[in-house]
Length: 120
Image 1 (tube, rainbow, N blue to C red):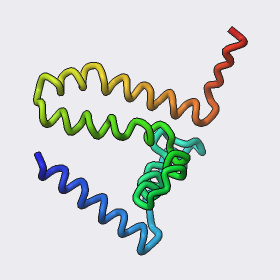
Image 2: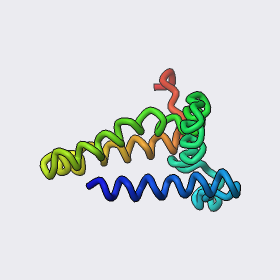
Image 3: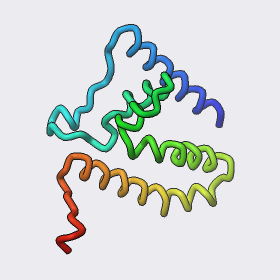
């Protein structure tokens, strides 16, 4: 269980070092092709800001993931701790709702879905 977290952290550290020393980072293929921000755009900027203790910049980079990242990380860790029963519940109910919320964020972030409460 700890091995996959170690590997993930190691890859993250290598990517951080690549960005810091070469200024090379992955670009978003969705944004390149469409011109729109994907729901995950700003994740690298958010993590770099968090590592520098700049919470305002991290929030601005991707507000949805900034607020839901602790929940997402906790659910992934608890999934491993509590086993199959919790994993099934998360897979069946929680993660699909999370993905839907992430997609709604991505749409509203680009101004493609404008809801006017007064026009209803």
